[in-house]
Length: 353
Image (spheres, rainbow, N blue to C red):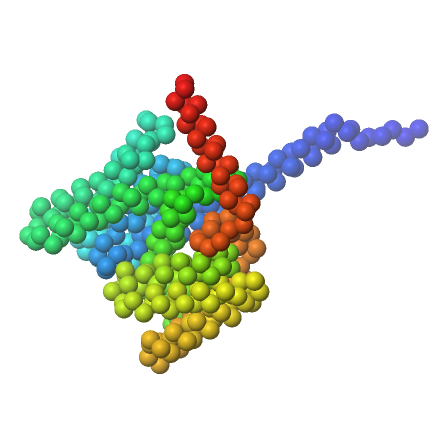
């Protein structure tokens, strides 16, 4: 009589090992993907410029990243340096590199010694990374009062930006499967606008990536937030060209009207939003811009619409979780009320303790 040579315990053990190897490979892939995402954000925020000379975004983001995700610190540092190298030169680039090194050494040591470093301390170190190297170089040079005032403004802007990025990177509301409060939505908008600022000057086949990204953001806001969401996102996005190159405020009208028309047709889902958005871009471009600018606006809008239709449904659901504006269902407000009640109960429990 033939014996069964298969030993089932060993077969189950081999199955568990195979599952463990698959899980490890998946975890490594997720880790690599997250590192690339953080590095991409660091690169764009390293390029982000306000009024052509202020760079408050990169120290704020890198400080928040070291506090929340220190394991990607070196990758983000290299990406930030690459972004800075593409927009600044000479003494300004040297000061930025010194500030980056200052952040890495100071905040890295602080987060290792103090678990759960307070956000105010993180923001203060981020501002100090601007003041210390640039102040030293200004003291050695012959710069005037305007350079000192620009340094102070840049450091002051970095403080609220660091606090906003801490909330975005922590993302506690998403982890709790709750709904974001007003301040969380505002922080996400600041983060997205900083990413758009970093796209300034980058082109694809002669078409500005800033225009494509701005159009895509307005389309997503119109789809998930209706007319109100599209209009608010359009106004916010229209400020980006004004902040980067002191462009006229006609961009605000262009994106606001396009978002309004797209949001009005949101009941027809992506096709309706795209139709309303393109109609707004065409009408306002003819009214405000010259022939060359009209062609560039339409090309960028068409590419944004193409990416909009290729966008995975998961991204749309995430944007829907993060309401930019507009009306929301009764369920949304009930969930938000429950979250606020939970916060109040937790604060009362801490007070009683």
